[in-house]
Length: 121
Image 1 (tube, rainbow, N blue to C red):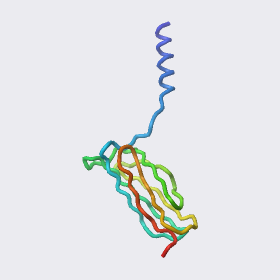
Image 2 (cartoon, rainbow, N blue to C red):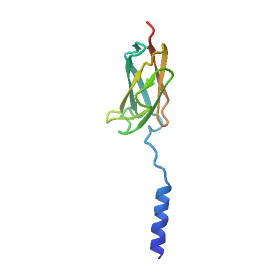
Image 3 (cartoon, rainbow, N blue to C red):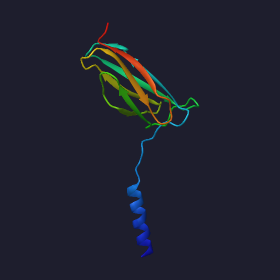
Image 4 (tube, helix red, strand yellow):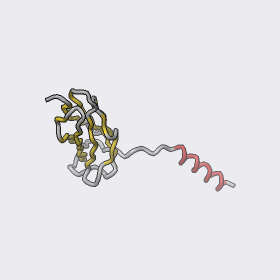
């Protein structure tokens, strides 16, 4: 009977625990770039983030990076790093002209941002 109670208690504990996304450790550095950095009002730009630990090595594969933009739309608001610590999303213009600031963040790493000019030439 005690074994059954212990199994039930452990099962409830496991069900009540949230799993969290893997994030970059303290001291990690994000480098962000956009290609191209000038697009038409309905154009697209590839946003690339490289995430490195303080040692210079890539963060663990699967580290989740969150993205936001001040203009246009992103293909996703999050992505997971590959074996090289790289994650990519696409910024698309939505017809509005201006400067989109795309920001990436994960864990204790400092945020990184890049500007993409949309529809202004």
